[in-house]
Amino acid sequence: MEDLDPTYIQAPEHRSYSNSIPNQPEEIPVIDLSRLNDPEDIQNVISEIGDACETWGFFQVINHGVPCDARKRVEETVKIFFDLPLEEKIKVKRDDVNPTGYHDGEHTKNVRDWKEVFDIYFKDPMVMPSSTDPEDQGLRVVYNKWPQFPSDFREACQEYAGHAEKLAFRLLELISLSLSLPKERFHGYFKEQMSFFRINRYPPCPRPDLALGVGHHKDADVISLLAQDEVGGLQISRRSDGVWFPIKPVPNALVINIGNCMEVWTNDKYWSAEHRVVVNSTRERYSIPFFLLPSHDVEVKPLEELVSPENPPRYIGYKYGKFYVNRNRSDFKKLEIQNIQIDDFKVVT
Ligand code: OGA
Ligand code: NI
Image 1 (cartoon, rainbow, N blue to C red):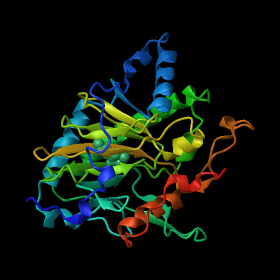
Image 2: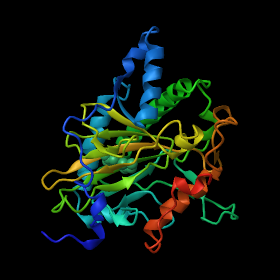
Image 3: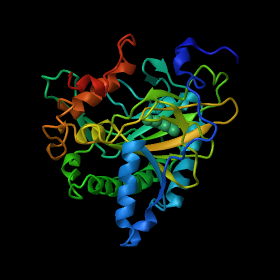
């Protein structure tokens, strides 16, 4: 299979070898959260997290409290599902009203990604706007789809997602403290959280020089917590110069990154880094991100405590739910239009 469907082909400047990675890349921080048990070390951990959010927008955590068994169980179970024939998988396929379930046609910036996904909302059911029209107040209640086989798919996913959500709030508290804000400053934004949990499978690709597993993008959430297997392929763009750096797999670590909402809340102090996934021709790869999203009715705008006359707001506010449905719609509409990006809300100066 040498021919690649043209929908997968990246523009030359976005291909995997486009922007060279230095021979001895700087290390993206790996932070040991067990240090939080030592009262004398807590402040150091908080400032290391703050520095990582500012410099890279990415870090990894180890000893984070998500049990290895729960992770292993979900990894094994989802593999059984993805190995099923396509006819089975599309029984729980995403559609244009319900964005949960299986999907193999994701596009990033209008180029098709070399991957299959399965999406599950943390809250079941989950409430979201029913249309992209800013005037329309209508809401839709969305239920997760679950495959019948393997039979423990649902339980394994829910167990893992419960642990991931707990860690997400712990990290949110640490991030809040790193900004000299009260620990629970952000909690009120999550009463009807739209958080979801995704399983990505990247099959071996005949032309990894032309396609990407996920094209360059920023996550549209608050923070993401990603479990990746040992294959590797995730790369992030360095804030200072845009050079791509690999996020090396560390056993049992979770990769944490800042999403658009946190970038807006901190008025660009914290950085939502572009990232992408490079594929390879021999090994499949799995990753399991948990995306922490606020409630649909939250208006996302720079926090008052973090703006001043010298540092005026760089974004106008936007309703999170409308932003989310706008972004999601692009897979089902004509692909000529670029989907909505956070920079659309930048204050023009
Ligand atoms: C994503 C993503 C990275 C990976 O799903 O948004 O960036 O390593 N995934 O799978
Ligand atoms: Ni991402």
